Image (cartoon, rainbow, N blue to C red; front, side, top):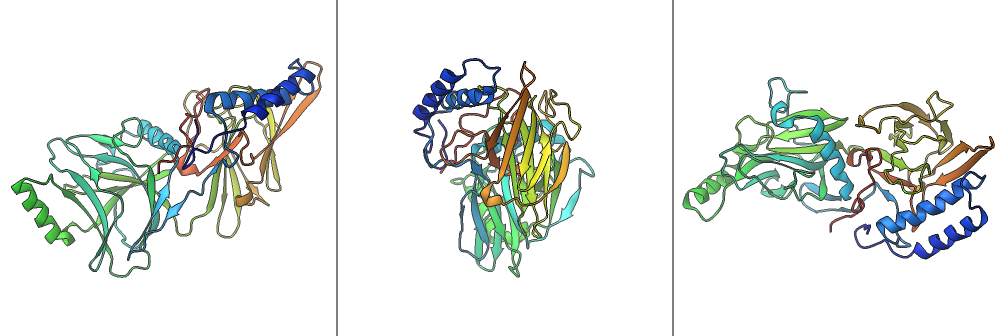
Length: 406
């Protein structure tokens, strides 16, 4: 069953099944001019069978999730996430041996001086504590006069453990934080620990920290780059180790329109890996727009139309029957092709794909795949590129990929 905030998947199965029977009664053979239409109807029926019925209000653009603003001296808005965000955590953790490399001399991009006046989206991805540490929680807060605002809820730090939002688990982080302190004069950030309460020694240590919080002002942080994503690493216990709290961050000042379209090309009726075409479309503040082809896991020729711009696989020199960057292990920031785009309207998702194939009689069959309307079975979905990677070959999108925890 798929979800978005609440249960939104219901009700379209009967229509799809009727359409399937109608098409099959016309053209029972696959290699006919209507082969794609038959496959499309089979795809819809199989999608509903696998994931559940679809609510008529279900949308398939997950790039503009709700912000819940908090009115304080520092702006810290909640940024909701679909569970598909776990994919980027898993892939970055698999590539980077973070337990050793984050703190090696020189590092990747090294240690930097902290600027407390920022506008940035922050997504907690990794937490680490050293063996023998007896802290209960890590804290990252913004201070401005007597006002204090937590960037994230206090994070449990257990003895000698690594936690993440992916397969290592332990982090119940289903949201990010949109932080803006850019014009907040006199603010400072603090990173500190707290100890289990109820013990005289621990209570005294917590009181000492709170009475001298300015001593825990963030002066430095570490920045690393993995798979085209930026991570900020903070030292909470002041031991020079910057792996305590690790956030994936995204510049929000100003934030561009940026979407990743993941597309099925109807090369099969029960394939839901959504990697047949993966294209990122990004518009800057001057409305300059570029598309980047990241993966092509399909084996059919296609023409991609984004706004007024068209791009074709075979015409651009790629082998039609070859899969690119999906098997066995994708390179998540690979650029297969990049080109300028005109006429793209982010709010309208005016993108479509025309897939074509030559049948045994030498006749080309084509089918158009538009961005799905509300309630449709999707062959295109949109996610924010930094928060959603495509699936490996023949690995279907998980059934809870679209689920948002309240």
